[in-house]
Length: 94
Image (cartoon, rainbow, N blue to C red; front, top):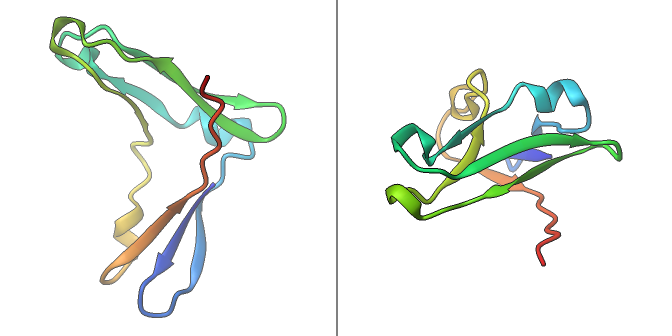
């Protein structure tokens, strides 16, 4: 879940809801492979209703990043002036 908040009014709007498989499928990995790296990542839907970002980051071949993006999502376009972005993240890192 990602929530946008207007700094002036403190109004909170749900911007991204990962509670459905369709919402998660709209996202694509952008990893260091675009510049010759070997990192890999993915965003998948968990049956309990949330997205899981997982992968491996490698420093080989001058790389070192993994990410996902939604080419249709442009959070700042609907806002006038500054806004904040709150992201709820749960980590299962070991």
